[in-house]
Amino acid sequence: MPMLLIKGFYDVKGTQPDGDTVAFTAENPEHWDLVGGGRGRAVEHSATGRAKLRLDAVDAPETHYGPGRVHQPLEFAHAARDELLSWLGFTEVQRAGNETVTATVPETVPGFVLTRAADIHGRCIALAGRGTHAEESGREIDVNEAELASTVNHRLIAAGFAYPMFYRSLFTSLRAELAARATEARDTGRGLWPADVTLTGAKITGLGTITDEALLFPKLFRRLVDYLALGMPLSCLRAYLAGGGDRYSILSTGERCVGLHRVVEVTDGQTVRMTRPPEDLLFEDA
Image (cartoon, rainbow, N blue to C red; front, side, top):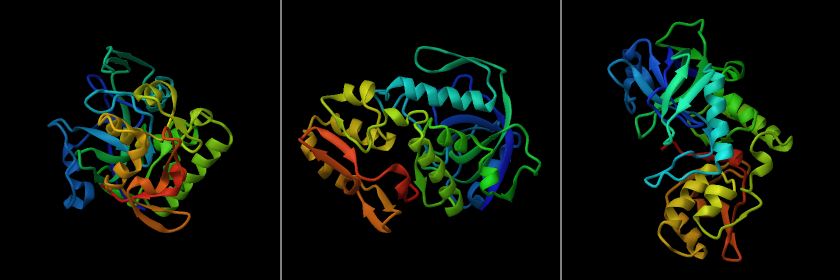
């Protein structure tokens, strides 16, 4: 799979990284203009080349979501964030109470990104690597399973720190590798998987259930947070999801769907669960 290689460094001071977003500075800021062949969405970046990455195929438990800055159970949200920064090479990270990084050791760490596009928020959708790369920055290289295995995306999923969330733009062979690692992590009880109740269901009595108790696939968590803010009963959740417009395919059946109501059940008026595992869903690029 051809992807643009951009070399640079990670510098997270003053930012609020979580388990699937992190700041990266390109050694040549003009290389951001090459993302998507220069024809797609632009990567928002500073004059010095600093931009925000959204890790491709990774959905980590939320540390701060939405205007209310709500979170998922912090044991798992912080574990994913800490593993991301540690794997990249930060040995010490100091933070303020609002999750903002105030200091790190070292101040920066070298790295590279492999990308094809930016998202609607101007973040670079990327596979993120550490250290140096043998190829020249600003050029496309072929990314295979071995290259994928050298990224933090692969690490977070294989070790069970985060959920897989696939978009159509990711090559099939790379998606299959990550799906296999996610399945293996769940089957062997790594990381967050023993606590996950996405498929078994969570009895939701209020917002606190999903922020402090029940660990769910973050995409479902985000939809639930938005829905609960409306003050409506959970019996109407599926109708709400039907109007949400999420477009995806169910990989095991080939069915193309609009709305998460197709893979979400609500029983006894309170218990919410997904009927398909995250790696079985392939979302349309937003």
